[in-house]
Image (cartoon, rainbow, N blue to C red):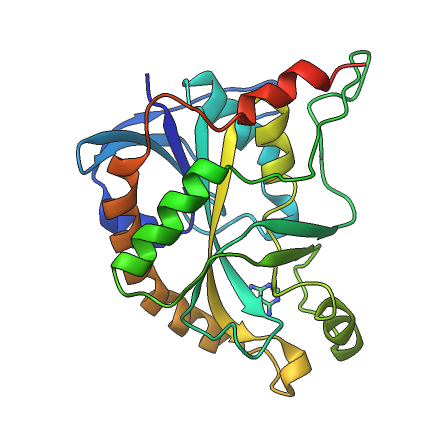
Amino acid sequence: MVKIGIIGGSGVYGVFEPKETVKVHTPYGRPSAPVEIGEIEGVEVAFIPRHGKNHEFPPHEVPYRANIWALHELGVERVIGVTAVGSLREEYKPGDIVITDQFIDFTKKRDYTFYNGPRVAHVSMADPFCPEMRKIFYETAKELGFPVHEKGTYVCIEGPRFSTRAESFMFRQYAHIIGMTLVPEINLARELGMCYANIATVTDYDVWADKPVDAQEVLKVMAENNYKVQELLKKAIPRIPEERKCGCADVLKSMFV
Ligand code: ADE
C-alpha cells in the first residue's frame, strides 16, 4: 500500500515518473485529477495535482474532501502539501522554504469537515503539523544548503483575489506567510488521522511591502522554487520512517462526541 501522498503543483512531476494512474470515486466526488502512483528514490508515493491537470480548479474550488479521501482510500498515512505563498515579513524572502508549524484560517466558504452529522466530531488543531515530517524536511533542506525557515505561521485566505493593503498589514501582525490552499486540506487529513506537513515556498512579498503582487512574477519565482522542492522531496522522502511515532493518529481517540 502506498503510505505517502503528495498534493502539490505541477512542479512535483519533475521528481517522479507516474507508473500507474488510479481513478478514485469518493463520496465527495472526484479528486482534482486521477491519482498518480510512482516512486521517489525507491519509495512509493501517490500524487494529486491540487489545481487539476490543467490548472482548472482555483483555490476556493479545489475538491479538498475528495483529494484527501482518495489518498486515504489508497492507504496513505502521511500527506505532504506543497504550496506557494506570499511573505508577510522581511526575513521570509522570495525563494525561501518554510516548514510551516501553525496556521490561521481566513477562508470563508469551503467544505471543512467529513463530519457534517449525524456523526459529530471536533478535531484537535493545537499543533496541526506532523512533528516527525517537519523535522526531516527542515534538516534535509538545511543539509541541501537551501534557505529554509524551521517555523512559520501561514494565514490562509479565501482567494482567488490577493489581499488589500489593510488586510496585509493586519495579517502580518500574526503570521509570516500567506496562501490560499492549506485550509481545509490539513483539517481533513487530520480528521482521518493522517499526518500532514506543509512545504511552503515563498514566491513574493505580499502588498504590505508596497509592491503589488504580480501574478507573472509569482509564476517565475515558482518555477525556480520547483527545483528546490524536487531536490528536497528526493532526499527527504527516503528518510521518512514507515512506522509512525508522531502521535498524529491519536487525534482519532479524542475527537468524537
Ligand atoms: N500565493 C502566493 N503569493 C500569495 C500572496 N501574496 N497572497 C496569497 N496567496 C499567495
